[in-house]
Figure (tube, rainbow, N blue to C red):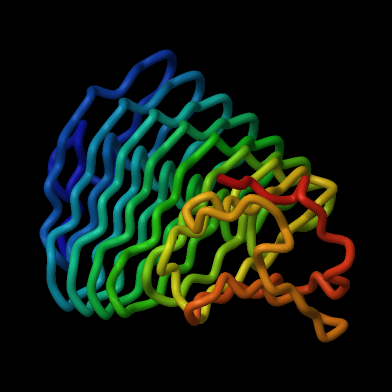
Length: 271
C-alpha cells in the first residue's frame, strides 16, 4: 500500500499543515489498494485543507481516501472536497475530512460518492472519531448503484464530548443501504444535525435508516417517487422499527422508531 499526499511527498506520514497555512487545490487519482490524502497527514493550529478532488481506482482491493488529512487538531478546518469511490468488488473507505477530529476543528462541506459494483462503500462525511468541540460540515453522501453494500454516515462512526453534527444529505443507491445521519455511536453531549435521507425510484428492498430523529428535524425525501402525501406510502411498525413501503419492492426500515403513527407529512419531502 502506498500513501499519496496532495501537498507532500509520497509516503511522508510526518507531513503537516500548521499555523495559518492553506492546502492547495488538488485533483488526485488513487490506484486501487492505495491510500490518498487531499493535503497532508496532520492539520493543526488554524490551518485549513484545500478543496480537493480524490478519485479511487477500480478493482478488488481496499482503497482509503481522506479529503484533507489523517488527523485534524486545534482550530483546523477541512476543505470542501469531492471523493469518488471506485467500481469493483473491493471495499472503499471515504472520509470527507479525516480519521479523527478533536479540539475546535470543523469539517468542510464535502461530497462523497460510493463506487458501483459488488463491493462495500463506507462513507464518513467528516471523520470516524469526533471529540472535543469538533463540528461536522454539511455533507452530501451518495450510495453506489451496484449490487454491493453502502454504509453512509453523515458525520462519523463515534461522536462524543460536545461534538456537533452537520446538516447532511444521504442519498440511497441501488444496493443495500444502511444510513446514519449523524454517527453510529453518540456519547456525552454530542448532538446531531438536521439530516435528509433521499430515496430515488428503484432505491431497493433492503435499506435502513439507523437514527431518524424528529427532534433533530430529520426528513425523508420521497419526491423521486412522485408521492404527494404520506398516504401514498404503506407504513407499518412492529413496536420496535417502522417500515415504509414505496411499492415495487422498494422498502426502507426506520430502526428504533417503534410507533409509525408518530410520522406526519412534516417528516417527508414530497414531489
